[in-house]
Amino acid sequence: MNRPPLHTALQDRDAVLRAFLAPDGSLTDIPTRLRKRLVVLDHLAQEFEPGEKYDETAVNARLRAFHPDVAALRRYLVDEGFLDRADGLYWRSGGSVD
Image (cartoon, rainbow, N blue to C red; front, side, top):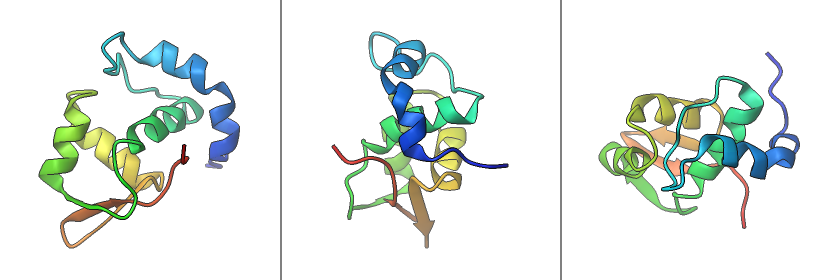
């Protein structure tokens, strides 16, 4: 499967976030289309400071504010290169920078 470049997916950022974020900032759903999911994952990646390491409990706590299926979100973030993990620790390894 060809992954669309993040910069291409982010062209529709505002529309995608309007469609998938509730007024309180939580996710109404996890997008099934990869292009839209990349936008949402980039948004979630902003919750993690570059250069800082997080244990799984800390990652889950941050993601739980957005959606109850933290395992799926964590897996997507790692699989799509927004977070890396080793030795039980996670760190931000991708995503846009404001």
